[in-house]
Length: 402
Image (cartoon, rainbow, N blue to C red):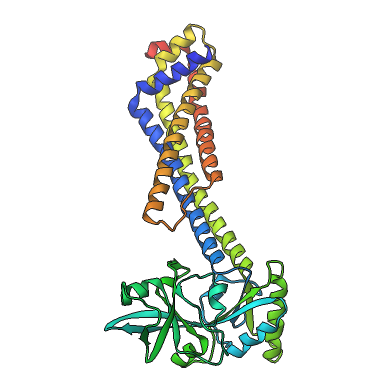
């Protein structure tokens, strides 16, 4: 039997039993689509988190109050409070480090802002003039915080774009007096729209001088200290210098945690990469289930086509040809199922991106290639047993049963 005849035989067999063919293709397509969609979710989460951390600054070193007990970066340290305190004087001392370019102390809290009878809750970030350039924020209007003595707290504020829209609509915001808490502040700048990032919506943020924020919240401690190294190569040196300066200020105790942006990125990239692999493994189980279904369907096909097989063998078709015909059919069903599943998976990933535009739900290339290859290999492997059974049929018995 020529290759063209084998392909025609497999095609006719598949189209001759539409229900059986549909079930096989559907099972395989669901398996492939699951791999594509779930890996798109996992890898999308990895890209989103890494992108968000990349956007918080360049050459960044972050000082957290308290000491990590593991000696390495623990993601929980970035969001939990600790009993250790950092002060504005600590932040000021870090400016002496040769490898440090900028330093921005950070105090955070919530308050209310009001203007013209309109009132809303806001997040307040207390910092210095270096905070905006360190965080890579941009101003749509006005200017940044004044360069002044950090112990002073000028009555000025920079507001996010959404706050400007809600309080002032089409009126100019810069120069207006607003009430934040029990204080009256003058707006000197408006941030460009950025949106949500790492739990903080900068469009709803108000930035004030650090000393003013501490007075507003009746606290002399800092939430974090953001340090920018002079270059990417200087990050390790800056980290060591920051730790040494704070150790000297804290009577020889290493009671702070200093992490680098690269360490944060590497940790989350590793964690979410492993999550993507795990999700892909779970989704791949559905491909194995699909393979078993293909095997069962092919076994039924052997029973249904006993007479056809007997006739082929009676006409002199060798066992190898019979095996090849059934394996070709299994490969054809698996390939069609894989292609349909790939298209469904891409459609699902596209829908995710439409519903969540900030979420880069693109399936990684390795997952697509692996799912398609696994589908084809699975179909062939589980098609071996039916093919062998068909090849071993006795032609006389097969024709008699038919």
